[in-house]
Image (cartoon, rainbow, N blue to C red; front, side):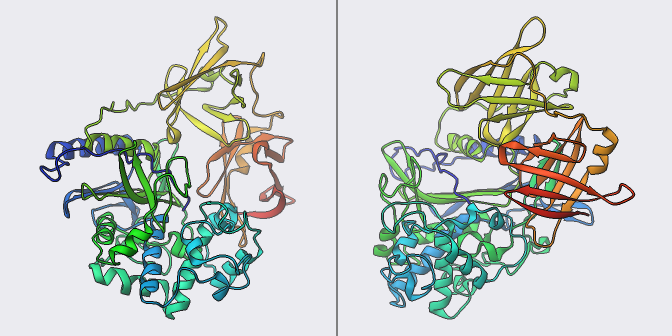
Length: 556
Protein backbone atom coordinates (compact mmCIF):
# COMPACT_ATOMS: atom_id res chain seq x y z
CA UNK A 1 0.00 0.00 0.00
CA UNK A 2 2.91 2.30 0.12
CA UNK A 3 2.77 5.13 -2.33
CA UNK A 4 4.68 5.07 -5.60
CA UNK A 5 5.77 8.42 -7.01
CA UNK A 6 3.72 9.12 -10.15
CA UNK A 7 6.64 10.57 -12.06
CA UNK A 8 6.06 8.26 -15.01
CA UNK A 9 2.77 9.78 -16.21
CA UNK A 10 4.71 12.07 -18.43
CA UNK A 11 2.87 14.10 -20.99
CA UNK A 12 0.17 14.74 -23.52
CA UNK A 13 0.23 16.53 -26.83
CA UNK A 14 -0.76 20.15 -27.18
CA UNK A 15 -2.93 19.41 -30.18
CA UNK A 16 -6.32 20.73 -31.17
CA UNK A 17 -8.96 19.32 -28.85
CA UNK A 18 -10.05 15.84 -29.98
CA UNK A 19 -9.17 16.61 -33.60
CA UNK A 20 -7.78 13.09 -33.86
CA UNK A 21 -7.16 10.08 -31.71
CA UNK A 22 -4.07 10.33 -29.54
CA UNK A 23 -3.65 6.56 -29.18
CA UNK A 24 -3.35 5.30 -32.76
CA UNK A 25 -3.26 1.70 -33.97
CA UNK A 26 0.47 2.01 -34.54
CA UNK A 27 0.97 3.06 -30.93
CA UNK A 28 -1.17 0.19 -29.68
CA UNK A 29 1.01 -2.23 -31.65
CA UNK A 30 4.14 -0.69 -30.14
CA UNK A 31 2.75 -0.94 -26.60
CA UNK A 32 1.73 -4.56 -27.11
CA UNK A 33 5.14 -5.38 -28.56
CA UNK A 34 6.89 -3.75 -25.60
CA UNK A 35 4.84 -5.54 -22.95
CA UNK A 36 5.10 -8.88 -24.75
CA UNK A 37 8.87 -8.42 -24.86
CA UNK A 38 9.06 -7.63 -21.14
CA UNK A 39 6.82 -10.56 -20.28
CA UNK A 40 8.82 -13.01 -22.38
CA UNK A 41 11.99 -11.78 -20.67
CA UNK A 42 10.35 -12.34 -17.25
CA UNK A 43 10.44 -8.66 -16.31
CA UNK A 44 6.70 -8.12 -15.91
CA UNK A 45 3.24 -9.69 -15.62
CA UNK A 46 -0.05 -7.83 -15.44
CA UNK A 47 -2.74 -5.93 -17.35
CA UNK A 48 -3.21 -2.60 -19.08
CA UNK A 49 -6.27 -0.64 -20.22
CA UNK A 50 -6.27 2.63 -22.14
CA UNK A 51 -9.46 4.58 -22.77
CA UNK A 52 -9.79 7.76 -24.79
CA UNK A 53 -12.90 9.95 -25.04
CA UNK A 54 -14.93 7.31 -23.19
CA UNK A 55 -13.94 4.45 -25.49
CA UNK A 56 -11.54 1.59 -24.88
CA UNK A 57 -8.64 1.72 -27.32
CA UNK A 58 -6.45 -1.01 -25.85
CA UNK A 59 -6.75 -3.68 -23.17
CA UNK A 60 -4.66 -6.79 -22.71
CA UNK A 61 -3.36 -9.11 -19.99
CA UNK A 62 0.05 -10.76 -19.81
CA UNK A 63 1.09 -13.66 -17.62
CA UNK A 64 -0.69 -15.72 -14.99
CA UNK A 65 -2.91 -15.29 -11.94
CA UNK A 66 -2.03 -18.53 -10.16
CA UNK A 67 -2.03 -22.29 -10.55
CA UNK A 68 -4.76 -24.94 -10.69
CA UNK A 69 -3.86 -28.62 -10.62
CA UNK A 70 -0.20 -27.54 -10.89
CA UNK A 71 -0.88 -25.80 -14.19
CA UNK A 72 -0.62 -22.01 -14.66
CA UNK A 73 -3.89 -20.11 -15.01
CA UNK A 74 -3.52 -17.28 -17.55
CA UNK A 75 -4.69 -13.75 -16.86
CA UNK A 76 -7.28 -12.09 -19.10
CA UNK A 77 -8.69 -8.61 -19.54
CA UNK A 78 -11.31 -9.26 -16.85
CA UNK A 79 -8.80 -10.42 -14.24
CA UNK A 80 -9.18 -8.69 -10.88
CA UNK A 81 -6.05 -7.40 -9.13
CA UNK A 82 -5.49 -5.95 -5.69
CA UNK A 83 -5.33 -2.23 -6.50
CA UNK A 84 -3.64 -1.16 -3.26
CA UNK A 85 -3.79 2.54 -2.44
CA UNK A 86 -5.93 3.37 -5.47
CA UNK A 87 -8.61 2.22 -2.98
CA UNK A 88 -8.14 5.57 -1.24
CA UNK A 89 -9.81 7.41 -4.12
CA UNK A 90 -12.92 5.24 -3.75
CA UNK A 91 -12.92 5.85 0.00
CA UNK A 92 -12.58 9.61 -0.47
CA UNK A 93 -15.47 9.68 -2.97
CA UNK A 94 -17.73 7.88 -0.48
CA UNK A 95 -16.80 10.31 2.31
CA UNK A 96 -17.65 13.21 -0.01
CA UNK A 97 -20.97 11.56 -0.93
CA UNK A 98 -21.89 11.25 2.75
CA UNK A 99 -20.90 14.88 3.30
CA UNK A 100 -23.11 15.94 0.38
CA UNK A 101 -25.97 13.98 1.98
CA UNK A 102 -25.24 15.79 5.28
CA UNK A 103 -24.60 12.52 7.08
CA UNK A 104 -21.24 13.86 8.19
CA UNK A 105 -19.19 17.04 7.90
CA UNK A 106 -15.62 17.28 6.70
CA UNK A 107 -15.01 19.43 9.77
CA UNK A 108 -16.21 16.71 12.17
CA UNK A 109 -13.51 15.89 14.68
CA UNK A 110 -12.16 12.38 14.92
CA UNK A 111 -13.24 12.30 18.59
CA UNK A 112 -16.87 12.16 17.40
CA UNK A 113 -16.16 8.66 16.13
CA UNK A 114 -13.05 7.36 17.91
CA UNK A 115 -12.15 9.45 20.94
CA UNK A 116 -9.46 7.02 22.14
CA UNK A 117 -7.05 8.05 19.39
CA UNK A 118 -4.26 10.58 19.96
CA UNK A 119 -5.18 14.20 19.09
CA UNK A 120 -8.73 13.04 18.27
CA UNK A 121 -10.19 16.35 19.54
CA UNK A 122 -8.05 18.27 17.03
CA UNK A 123 -8.06 16.06 13.92
CA UNK A 124 -10.83 16.65 11.36
CA UNK A 125 -12.11 14.33 8.65
CA UNK A 126 -10.67 16.83 6.18
CA UNK A 127 -7.20 16.28 7.66
CA UNK A 128 -7.59 12.53 7.35
CA UNK A 129 -8.45 12.98 3.68
CA UNK A 130 -5.42 15.13 2.85
CA UNK A 131 -2.89 13.42 5.13
CA UNK A 132 -2.49 16.30 7.56
CA UNK A 133 -3.63 14.42 10.69
CA UNK A 134 -0.14 13.63 11.96
CA UNK A 135 -1.20 10.08 12.82
CA UNK A 136 1.56 7.52 12.60
CA UNK A 137 1.47 5.36 9.47
CA UNK A 138 0.77 1.87 10.82
CA UNK A 139 2.22 0.10 7.77
CA UNK A 140 5.66 1.38 8.75
CA UNK A 141 5.62 -1.49 11.26
CA UNK A 142 6.65 -4.91 10.00
CA UNK A 143 3.72 -6.55 11.77
CA UNK A 144 1.09 -4.88 9.58
CA UNK A 145 3.02 -5.17 6.33
CA UNK A 146 3.04 -8.91 6.91
CA UNK A 147 -0.38 -9.50 8.49
CA UNK A 148 -1.48 -12.73 6.82
CA UNK A 149 -4.30 -13.62 9.21
CA UNK A 150 -7.55 -11.75 9.97
CA UNK A 151 -7.37 -8.81 12.34
CA UNK A 152 -10.39 -7.13 13.92
CA UNK A 153 -11.33 -3.45 13.81
CA UNK A 154 -10.97 -3.41 17.59
CA UNK A 155 -7.38 -4.66 17.32
CA UNK A 156 -6.54 -2.11 14.63
CA UNK A 157 -7.97 0.78 16.64
CA UNK A 158 -6.11 -0.35 19.76
CA UNK A 159 -2.89 -0.31 17.74
CA UNK A 160 -3.61 3.16 16.36
CA UNK A 161 -4.35 4.42 19.89
CA UNK A 162 -0.96 3.28 21.13
CA UNK A 163 1.04 4.88 18.30
CA UNK A 164 2.65 8.23 19.00
CA UNK A 165 1.66 10.94 16.47
CA UNK A 166 4.33 12.21 14.08
CA UNK A 167 3.29 15.88 14.29
CA UNK A 168 0.52 18.20 15.41
CA UNK A 169 -2.60 18.11 13.15
CA UNK A 170 -2.55 20.60 10.29
CA UNK A 171 1.12 21.53 10.63
CA UNK A 172 2.53 19.18 7.97
CA UNK A 173 1.56 16.69 5.28
CA UNK A 174 2.70 13.06 5.54
CA UNK A 175 1.19 10.08 3.74
CA UNK A 176 -0.37 7.68 6.25
CA UNK A 177 -2.47 4.59 5.62
CA UNK A 178 -3.88 5.03 9.12
CA UNK A 179 -5.90 8.01 7.85
CA UNK A 180 -7.79 5.97 5.29
CA UNK A 181 -8.33 2.95 7.51
CA UNK A 182 -10.11 5.37 9.88
CA UNK A 183 -12.11 6.93 7.06
CA UNK A 184 -13.36 3.47 6.14
CA UNK A 185 -14.39 2.83 9.73
CA UNK A 186 -16.18 6.20 9.81
CA UNK A 187 -18.12 5.28 6.67
CA UNK A 188 -19.24 2.07 8.36
CA UNK A 189 -20.19 3.84 11.58
CA UNK A 190 -22.17 6.59 9.87
CA UNK A 191 -24.14 4.25 7.58
CA UNK A 192 -24.41 1.14 9.74
CA UNK A 193 -23.25 -0.89 6.74
CA UNK A 194 -19.97 -2.58 5.87
CA UNK A 195 -17.37 -0.86 3.72
CA UNK A 196 -18.11 -3.19 0.81
CA UNK A 197 -21.87 -2.66 1.09
CA UNK A 198 -21.25 1.08 0.82
CA UNK A 199 -18.84 0.59 -2.07
CA UNK A 200 -21.45 -1.37 -3.99
CA UNK A 201 -24.34 0.98 -3.21
CA UNK A 202 -22.61 4.34 -3.60
CA UNK A 203 -20.28 3.58 -6.52
CA UNK A 204 -20.37 0.19 -8.21
CA UNK A 205 -24.10 -0.20 -8.86
CA UNK A 206 -24.33 3.36 -10.14
CA UNK A 207 -21.59 2.72 -12.69
CA UNK A 208 -22.17 -0.94 -13.48
CA UNK A 209 -18.86 -2.03 -11.97
CA UNK A 210 -19.69 -5.68 -11.39
CA UNK A 211 -16.18 -6.86 -10.54
CA UNK A 212 -15.00 -4.17 -8.12
CA UNK A 213 -15.29 -5.06 -4.45
CA UNK A 214 -13.63 -5.50 -1.07
CA UNK A 215 -13.15 -9.26 -0.71
CA UNK A 216 -14.08 -11.17 2.44
CA UNK A 217 -10.90 -13.21 2.54
CA UNK A 218 -8.08 -14.54 0.42
CA UNK A 219 -7.64 -14.58 -3.33
CA UNK A 220 -9.79 -17.05 -5.28
CA UNK A 221 -8.50 -17.74 -8.79
CA UNK A 222 -11.80 -19.49 -9.63
CA UNK A 223 -13.27 -15.96 -9.49
CA UNK A 224 -10.54 -14.67 -11.81
CA UNK A 225 -8.74 -12.99 -8.90
CA UNK A 226 -4.96 -12.71 -9.28
CA UNK A 227 -2.15 -13.57 -6.92
CA UNK A 228 1.14 -11.66 -7.10
CA UNK A 229 4.52 -13.24 -7.74
CA UNK A 230 8.25 -12.77 -7.36
CA UNK A 231 10.84 -14.11 -9.78
CA UNK A 232 12.86 -16.84 -8.13
CA UNK A 233 16.46 -17.41 -9.25
CA UNK A 234 15.74 -15.45 -12.45
CA UNK A 235 13.73 -18.41 -13.74
CA UNK A 236 10.35 -19.20 -12.18
CA UNK A 237 7.47 -17.22 -10.71
CA UNK A 238 6.89 -17.85 -7.01
CA UNK A 239 3.61 -16.80 -5.45
CA UNK A 240 3.80 -14.13 -2.75
CA UNK A 241 1.80 -14.66 0.40
CA UNK A 242 -0.92 -12.02 0.66
CA UNK A 243 -1.68 -9.57 3.44
CA UNK A 244 -5.15 -10.26 4.83
CA UNK A 245 -7.68 -7.77 3.53
CA UNK A 246 -8.69 -6.80 7.09
CA UNK A 247 -5.26 -5.20 7.50
CA UNK A 248 -5.72 -2.96 4.46
CA UNK A 249 -9.48 -2.39 4.01
CA UNK A 250 -10.35 1.17 2.91
CA UNK A 251 -6.67 2.11 2.65
CA UNK A 252 -5.77 -0.54 0.08
CA UNK A 253 -7.98 -3.63 0.07
CA UNK A 254 -10.18 -3.23 -3.02
CA UNK A 255 -9.78 -5.58 -5.99
CA UNK A 256 -10.83 -4.69 -9.55
CA UNK A 257 -10.01 -5.22 -13.24
CA UNK A 258 -8.12 -2.46 -15.05
CA UNK A 259 -11.04 -1.40 -17.22
CA UNK A 260 -13.37 -0.79 -14.28
CA UNK A 261 -10.79 1.41 -12.56
CA UNK A 262 -10.58 3.53 -15.72
CA UNK A 263 -14.35 3.89 -15.79
CA UNK A 264 -14.46 4.86 -12.12
CA UNK A 265 -12.02 7.75 -12.63
CA UNK A 266 -13.82 8.86 -15.79
CA UNK A 267 -17.18 8.85 -13.99
CA UNK A 268 -15.79 10.90 -11.13
CA UNK A 269 -14.55 13.61 -13.48
CA UNK A 270 -17.81 13.49 -15.44
CA UNK A 271 -19.67 14.28 -12.18
CA UNK A 272 -21.58 10.99 -12.22
CA UNK A 273 -20.74 10.33 -8.56
CA UNK A 274 -20.49 13.82 -7.11
CA UNK A 275 -21.46 17.35 -8.15
CA UNK A 276 -18.74 19.33 -9.89
CA UNK A 277 -18.20 21.51 -6.82
CA UNK A 278 -17.40 18.45 -4.68
CA UNK A 279 -15.02 16.99 -7.27
CA UNK A 280 -13.26 20.34 -7.49
CA UNK A 281 -12.87 20.35 -3.73
CA UNK A 282 -11.15 16.94 -3.89
CA UNK A 283 -8.57 17.98 -6.46
CA UNK A 284 -5.09 18.92 -5.26
CA UNK A 285 -3.30 22.07 -6.38
CA UNK A 286 0.13 21.39 -7.82
CA UNK A 287 2.82 22.68 -5.48
CA UNK A 288 0.54 22.74 -2.43
CA UNK A 289 0.18 20.03 0.22
CA UNK A 290 3.02 18.04 -1.32
CA UNK A 291 3.65 14.41 -0.42
CA UNK A 292 6.68 14.03 -2.72
CA UNK A 293 8.93 16.43 -4.57
CA UNK A 294 6.56 16.38 -7.55
CA UNK A 295 3.16 15.20 -6.27
CA UNK A 296 0.55 17.17 -4.34
CA UNK A 297 -2.32 15.49 -2.49
CA UNK A 298 -5.99 16.42 -2.36
CA UNK A 299 -8.75 14.16 -1.04
CA UNK A 300 -7.70 10.69 -2.19
CA UNK A 301 -6.19 12.10 -5.40
CA UNK A 302 -2.65 13.02 -6.37
CA UNK A 303 -1.51 15.45 -9.03
CA UNK A 304 0.21 13.86 -12.00
CA UNK A 305 2.31 16.69 -13.42
CA UNK A 306 4.13 16.93 -16.74
CA UNK A 307 6.50 19.85 -16.86
CA UNK A 308 4.91 23.17 -15.98
CA UNK A 309 2.06 23.01 -18.48
CA UNK A 310 0.01 19.88 -17.96
CA UNK A 311 -1.53 18.37 -14.83
CA UNK A 312 -3.29 15.03 -14.65
CA UNK A 313 -4.84 13.31 -11.65
CA UNK A 314 -4.69 9.79 -10.30
CA UNK A 315 -3.38 7.44 -7.67
CA UNK A 316 -0.94 4.56 -7.39
CA UNK A 317 -0.72 1.56 -5.13
CA UNK A 318 1.54 -1.18 -3.88
CA UNK A 319 0.46 -4.19 -1.83
CA UNK A 320 2.02 -7.66 -1.64
CA UNK A 321 3.74 -7.99 -5.03
CA UNK A 322 1.22 -5.79 -6.86
CA UNK A 323 2.08 -2.37 -8.27
CA UNK A 324 -0.81 -0.39 -9.72
CA UNK A 325 -1.57 3.03 -11.13
CA UNK A 326 -4.43 4.87 -12.79
CA UNK A 327 -4.06 8.34 -14.26
CA UNK A 328 -6.68 10.58 -15.87
CA UNK A 329 -5.97 13.64 -18.01
CA UNK A 330 -9.21 15.66 -18.26
CA UNK A 331 -8.13 17.80 -21.23
CA UNK A 332 -7.51 14.70 -23.36
CA UNK A 333 -10.24 12.58 -21.79
CA UNK A 334 -7.50 9.96 -21.51
CA UNK A 335 -7.39 7.33 -18.77
CA UNK A 336 -4.69 4.72 -18.32
CA UNK A 337 -4.67 1.87 -15.81
CA UNK A 338 -1.62 -0.35 -15.57
CA UNK A 339 -1.37 -3.19 -13.04
CA UNK A 340 1.65 -5.39 -12.36
CA UNK A 341 1.49 -8.67 -10.43
CA UNK A 342 5.00 -9.86 -11.26
CA UNK A 343 7.33 -6.91 -10.84
CA UNK A 344 10.97 -7.46 -11.68
CA UNK A 345 11.84 -4.40 -13.72
CA UNK A 346 11.13 -0.99 -12.20
CA UNK A 347 7.38 -0.24 -12.44
CA UNK A 348 8.19 3.42 -13.00
CA UNK A 349 10.48 2.61 -15.90
CA UNK A 350 7.89 0.48 -17.69
CA UNK A 351 5.42 3.33 -17.40
CA UNK A 352 7.95 5.72 -18.86
CA UNK A 353 8.26 3.46 -21.90
CA UNK A 354 4.48 3.21 -22.24
CA UNK A 355 3.84 6.92 -21.98
CA UNK A 356 6.76 7.71 -24.26
CA UNK A 357 4.98 5.70 -26.96
CA UNK A 358 1.60 7.34 -26.35
CA UNK A 359 2.93 10.89 -26.23
CA UNK A 360 5.48 10.57 -29.06
CA UNK A 361 8.53 10.87 -26.84
CA UNK A 362 11.83 9.32 -27.85
CA UNK A 363 12.82 6.17 -25.99
CA UNK A 364 15.19 3.25 -26.37
CA UNK A 365 13.87 -0.26 -25.94
CA UNK A 366 15.79 -1.89 -23.09
CA UNK A 367 18.29 -4.58 -24.02
CA UNK A 368 17.52 -7.39 -21.64
CA UNK A 369 19.97 -10.21 -21.28
CA UNK A 370 21.72 -12.23 -18.63
CA UNK A 371 24.71 -14.54 -18.60
CA UNK A 372 25.73 -17.42 -16.39
CA UNK A 373 28.54 -16.81 -13.92
CA UNK A 374 30.44 -19.08 -11.58
CA UNK A 375 32.29 -18.57 -8.33
CA UNK A 376 35.62 -18.17 -10.12
CA UNK A 377 34.36 -15.40 -12.44
CA UNK A 378 33.23 -13.34 -9.42
CA UNK A 379 36.63 -13.55 -7.74
CA UNK A 380 38.21 -10.10 -7.54
CA UNK A 381 34.94 -8.14 -7.54
CA UNK A 382 33.97 -8.10 -3.82
CA UNK A 383 35.16 -5.12 -1.82
CA UNK A 384 34.20 -1.69 -0.54
CA UNK A 385 33.83 1.15 -3.05
CA UNK A 386 33.68 4.90 -2.38
CA UNK A 387 33.27 8.16 -4.32
CA UNK A 388 34.33 11.67 -3.19
CA UNK A 389 31.40 13.69 -1.86
CA UNK A 390 29.05 10.70 -1.70
CA UNK A 391 27.94 10.07 1.91
CA UNK A 392 27.88 6.29 1.65
CA UNK A 393 30.00 3.36 0.57
CA UNK A 394 28.92 0.41 -1.54
CA UNK A 395 29.95 -3.00 -0.27
CA UNK A 396 30.03 -5.84 -2.79
CA UNK A 397 30.04 -9.43 -1.55
CA UNK A 398 29.92 -12.85 -3.18
CA UNK A 399 28.30 -16.12 -2.15
CA UNK A 400 28.90 -18.99 -4.50
CA UNK A 401 27.86 -17.85 -7.96
CA UNK A 402 25.84 -14.86 -6.67
CA UNK A 403 26.97 -11.26 -6.24
CA UNK A 404 25.38 -8.83 -3.78
CA UNK A 405 25.68 -5.07 -3.30
CA UNK A 406 24.77 -2.89 -0.36
CA UNK A 407 24.90 0.87 0.17
CA UNK A 408 25.71 2.04 3.70
CA UNK A 409 22.64 1.85 5.94
CA UNK A 410 20.48 0.24 3.24
CA UNK A 411 19.33 -3.27 2.40
CA UNK A 412 21.57 -5.46 0.27
CA UNK A 413 20.37 -6.50 -3.17
CA UNK A 414 21.13 -9.37 -5.52
CA UNK A 415 22.82 -8.51 -8.81
CA UNK A 416 22.18 -10.22 -12.15
CA UNK A 417 25.08 -10.65 -14.57
CA UNK A 418 24.44 -9.14 -18.01
CA UNK A 419 27.99 -9.17 -19.37
CA UNK A 420 31.60 -9.65 -18.37
CA UNK A 421 31.94 -7.82 -15.03
CA UNK A 422 28.63 -6.03 -15.71
CA UNK A 423 25.60 -6.52 -13.48
CA UNK A 424 22.18 -5.02 -12.92
CA UNK A 425 19.68 -4.58 -10.11
CA UNK A 426 16.46 -4.81 -12.11
CA UNK A 427 14.00 -3.36 -9.61
CA UNK A 428 15.86 -0.03 -9.45
CA UNK A 429 17.34 -0.08 -12.99
CA UNK A 430 20.87 0.13 -11.62
CA UNK A 431 23.75 -1.05 -13.81
CA UNK A 432 27.10 -1.76 -12.15
CA UNK A 433 30.28 -2.20 -14.19
CA UNK A 434 33.65 -3.19 -12.71
CA UNK A 435 37.15 -2.47 -14.05
CA UNK A 436 39.92 -4.86 -13.00
CA UNK A 437 43.69 -4.42 -12.80
CA UNK A 438 46.17 -6.81 -14.43
CA UNK A 439 45.96 -9.12 -11.44
CA UNK A 440 42.17 -9.42 -11.83
CA UNK A 441 41.26 -7.33 -8.79
CA UNK A 442 38.50 -4.79 -9.46
CA UNK A 443 39.75 -1.27 -8.78
CA UNK A 444 36.63 0.72 -9.65
CA UNK A 445 32.90 0.41 -9.98
CA UNK A 446 30.65 2.55 -12.19
CA UNK A 447 27.00 2.77 -11.21
CA UNK A 448 24.43 3.93 -13.80
CA UNK A 449 20.83 4.85 -13.05
CA UNK A 450 18.46 7.01 -15.08
CA UNK A 451 21.24 8.32 -17.32
CA UNK A 452 23.46 9.36 -14.40
CA UNK A 453 26.84 7.74 -13.79
CA UNK A 454 28.87 7.53 -10.60
CA UNK A 455 32.47 6.30 -10.47
CA UNK A 456 33.46 4.64 -7.20
CA UNK A 457 36.97 3.42 -6.37
CA UNK A 458 37.99 0.45 -4.26
CA UNK A 459 39.05 1.46 -0.76
CA UNK A 460 39.99 -1.98 0.59
CA UNK A 461 43.20 -3.74 -0.22
CA UNK A 462 41.57 -7.14 -0.38
CA UNK A 463 38.18 -8.68 -0.96
CA UNK A 464 35.15 -8.33 1.26
CA UNK A 465 34.49 -11.70 2.83
CA UNK A 466 30.94 -12.81 3.43
CA UNK A 467 31.59 -15.32 6.18
CA UNK A 468 34.03 -14.80 9.03
CA UNK A 469 33.66 -18.44 10.00
CA UNK A 470 33.73 -21.39 7.61
CA UNK A 471 30.78 -23.71 8.28
CA UNK A 472 30.66 -27.25 6.95
CA UNK A 473 28.54 -27.47 3.81
CA UNK A 474 26.62 -30.50 5.07
CA UNK A 475 25.56 -28.54 8.15
CA UNK A 476 24.47 -25.58 5.99
CA UNK A 477 22.30 -27.94 3.93
CA UNK A 478 20.55 -29.09 7.11
CA UNK A 479 19.62 -25.49 7.92
CA UNK A 480 17.77 -25.13 4.61
CA UNK A 481 14.00 -24.96 4.88
CA UNK A 482 11.03 -22.87 5.98
CA UNK A 483 10.57 -21.63 9.55
CA UNK A 484 7.53 -20.07 11.17
CA UNK A 485 5.39 -19.56 14.27
CA UNK A 486 1.64 -19.01 14.79
CA UNK A 487 2.15 -15.47 16.13
CA UNK A 488 4.82 -14.45 13.59
CA UNK A 489 3.48 -12.64 10.49
CA UNK A 490 5.75 -14.25 7.86
CA UNK A 491 7.60 -17.38 6.89
CA UNK A 492 11.41 -17.39 6.97
CA UNK A 493 13.16 -19.33 4.20
CA UNK A 494 16.79 -20.41 4.54
CA UNK A 495 18.72 -21.37 1.40
CA UNK A 496 22.24 -22.72 0.93
CA UNK A 497 24.16 -20.51 -1.50
CA UNK A 498 27.63 -21.79 -2.28
CA UNK A 499 29.70 -21.71 0.90
CA UNK A 500 27.06 -19.81 2.88
CA UNK A 501 23.33 -19.43 3.48
CA UNK A 502 20.79 -16.70 2.80
CA UNK A 503 17.56 -15.66 4.52
CA UNK A 504 14.32 -14.40 3.01
CA UNK A 505 11.08 -13.40 4.72
CA UNK A 506 7.77 -13.73 2.86
CA UNK A 507 7.52 -10.88 0.36
CA UNK A 508 10.94 -9.53 1.40
CA UNK A 509 14.34 -9.34 -0.36
CA UNK A 510 16.80 -12.19 0.08
CA UNK A 511 19.87 -11.39 2.23
CA UNK A 512 23.22 -13.20 2.61
CA UNK A 513 24.08 -14.22 6.17
CA UNK A 514 27.46 -14.00 7.88
CA UNK A 515 28.46 -16.96 10.03
CA UNK A 516 29.34 -16.04 13.61
CA UNK A 517 29.81 -19.69 14.55
CA UNK A 518 28.42 -23.04 13.44
CA UNK A 519 24.88 -22.27 14.68
CA UNK A 520 24.67 -18.47 14.70
CA UNK A 521 24.40 -16.23 11.64
CA UNK A 522 23.84 -12.49 11.26
CA UNK A 523 22.91 -9.75 8.81
CA UNK A 524 24.27 -6.63 10.48
CA UNK A 525 22.65 -3.89 8.31
CA UNK A 526 19.25 -4.63 9.85
CA UNK A 527 20.47 -5.97 13.19
CA UNK A 528 19.30 -9.52 12.43
CA UNK A 529 20.69 -12.61 14.14
CA UNK A 530 19.60 -16.23 13.69
CA UNK A 531 20.53 -19.03 16.07
CA UNK A 532 19.62 -22.51 14.84
CA UNK A 533 18.35 -25.14 17.29
CA UNK A 534 18.63 -28.94 17.12
CA UNK A 535 17.45 -31.92 19.12
CA UNK A 536 19.61 -34.55 20.80
CA UNK A 537 20.09 -36.38 17.51
CA UNK A 538 21.27 -33.28 15.67
CA UNK A 539 18.03 -32.73 13.72
CA UNK A 540 17.39 -29.02 13.11
CA UNK A 541 14.13 -28.17 14.88
CA UNK A 542 13.95 -24.38 14.65
CA UNK A 543 15.68 -21.09 15.20
CA UNK A 544 15.76 -18.11 17.52
CA UNK A 545 15.32 -14.95 15.43
CA UNK A 546 16.57 -11.79 17.11
CA UNK A 547 15.91 -8.31 15.77
CA UNK A 548 15.33 -6.07 18.76
CA UNK A 549 13.47 -8.90 20.48
CA UNK A 550 13.80 -12.68 20.16
CA UNK A 551 11.16 -14.91 18.57
CA UNK A 552 11.29 -18.70 18.45
CA UNK A 553 10.47 -20.21 15.06
CA UNK A 554 9.84 -23.87 14.30
CA UNK A 555 11.21 -25.60 11.22
CA UNK A 556 8.34 -26.84 9.06
